[in-house]
Amino acid sequence: MNEPGWIVAAILAGLVLLALLFRARLLAAFGYELRPVDPQGSADDQSREPADDFRRDGQGAREERNRLEGLFDLEELEVSDVMVHRTNMRSVNADNPSEAVVREILNSPHTRMPLWKGSLDNIVGVLHAKDLLRALNEVGNDFSRIDVMKIASKPWFVPDTTTLQDQLNAFLRRKAHFAIVVDEYGEVEGLVTLEDIIEEIVGEIADEHDVDIQGVKQEADGSVVVDGTVAIRDLNRALDWNLPDEEATTIAGLVIHETQSIPDEKQAFTFHGKRFVVMKRDKNRIARLRIKPAGDA
Image (cartoon, rainbow, N blue to C red):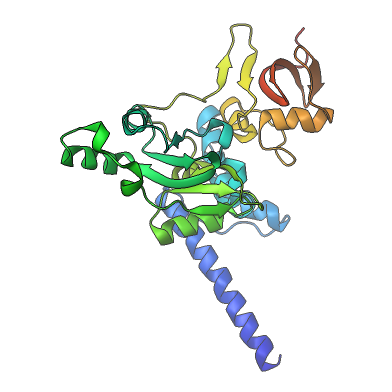
């Protein structure tokens, strides 16, 4: 091998080693240990065999499998797969009166709030509740004296095609927790947080403000009523389903992809072992669906 080729090979080997060490440390942080495995089978099967080494029953086994598979998926998934879509993104119009802006932020369950002017595609800042409380204390809790733009931080925009691995590294490098996701034209697609990516590895991180799955309601008849913007991956994890998410991120997107149309209300379709009934349509958007096993009437 000539000298330039040897140098390239050495660099690539170093990068592979660093990636393996990074994964090993992440596994160790979650209490797992990588061990040698039988070299039979495909490379992809071998990479996921650690998940099969855990012998636990029921929900516990599924949770362990989800954690390890989430770790291995970081390089395959993009931020658009886990982001909060703009239709579900809470934000504040910075042009509103100071009192209204402050009250809206204080009443929000979220720590950080995007600020926009003119339209949602013009995000001008991100306000942290802790910074707002500190500013309020300095002005004697007089909401009218608060200038939110002076205490807001500069927004960080990231492309929707960024892999979760790259975004996780960027969050850690910048010591940041929050980014605005934009498409190739610079239009706001949603937002992604460090917690969103960690949840892909360890599962849902619940706190006192969380609900089981926002936008999902289990009915007494066994059906599930789902907002169209709910992520397919979240449904699969919570309900142990296997709906495909290669062509669509949300459940509404899956229905549109499968039907190649925007269905009308009360239309019903059967695919992937489920019966989908459109309950509500908002202009050209599927707002709500009822999903039940395909065999149910």
